[in-house]
Image (cartoon, rainbow over all chains, first blue to last red; front, side, top):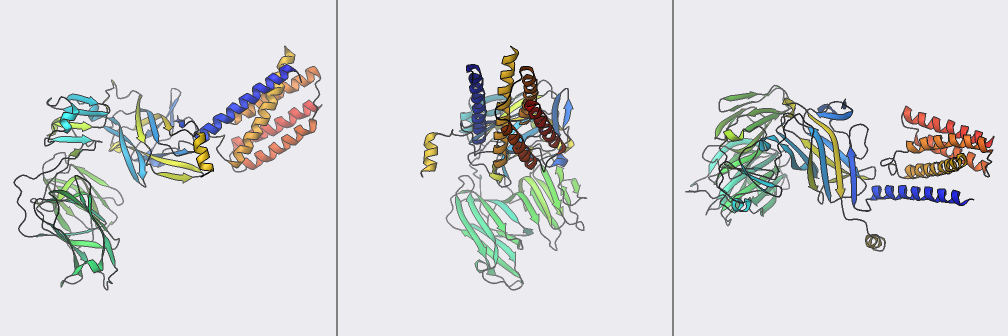
Length: 479
Length: 113
């Protein structure tokens, strides 16, 4: 064999080894990095297609570039990884002509996503005074604070709105007088309940009335109750409720669970009740002056079909699966009639004032974005409001907005733009698929169905973790 | 110059052919290991192009191979592997498979003449 042949052969062997090392690095992320790209020109196993398919258009081509249109939300995509990673930097090249908020989320528990803003046109176009510190931005209608720390260390009792920013204020009710006797409310609900109440130099006393099955035994399960200090996040009570924990009443088929806490510190408390599937609460009695519901209520089948509430929510949604009992919602003078089942119907009343809410219907789920109370006197809202996509900030009674978002103004909404996001994956929820670790992302753009579609041209995902070291391999092998 | 080109094409053919077989075997045991990051059709194209060059060189320089039967064996092995791997997939992959087999047979037939 000539020297030349040998040299060519050695050259090709080196090329083969380089390819092999490249593949090993890509498959095991030896250096601790993995860069993925999806440009819609061809199928990519590592970054799956958008799902569900009925919320996206077919992949289209425009001047040589491929893109896909998002028509409705939420939309999901998965990335299939050879290993667990600690961090993901995502880059989206997209066009968004009219959607106010576009957010991307990563799955942190089954069905639970951590969202980060990709674009927020409301904040991008806001001309208030801006203070920035890293990724945190504070907008002030009238400039008062010199730094973000000054703002965060203030009493936070002004009209504040937050956006993807973890901020709580310590609510103290002024001129508070505890209730002298318990108030009773008729409301028949099932599934999960999330309530907030306030304690100031008084015990917490709440009664929940359950419907009883025909012949209950002492181990009959009714649900779980969790009581938490809202500001500090400390759990005060976490208890399963069985028939033996209830006080049976003379009234037919009814029993009462008494929540009585005598030594609570002053403050706001969250009560979560997760009812067993076949159980419902039919009545409440509250010794607290303030008591509000958050997020949603599932009104169960009951004789009384009209329920009255009070709420400062802006957006309300109704859902039912019963064609024979289509619900109607009235918020102040605005009426929402549901004509479809298995679909959320939406009503927006863009004012923050307390409104009367009338719901006619049974077995219906009511969603609301702020607090909801059973009467005017028990209403309170100790929360800092979260920015909503349909708000017109300049018309709202808001003085400050704090967000985990860097505003970026673009000259033309029809331009392709590139924006980046970073996610911590240390506690992300991975699924297993054909030997790969699958990570699920969500694209959320509320109201997308009513606006122009969002076009996505490119998704780049740069993942990182600790590199594989000889030390690590040794530890794994000889452990 | 033509002789050096032939030498290069011959080594390129060996390299691409052997690499292709190794990658197909890896892909068989760990699907996606190669295909997710490297398009194996590139190797098919290199094999065919360098193979045609090889046929030209063998005729031009009256080159004779030492281990002719090894070549036949490898082509058969590759064919069986490809057939197994492509049994569930679409028409395009079948065309690639057919092109590989016909190309392989043609190249080895010409080389051995």
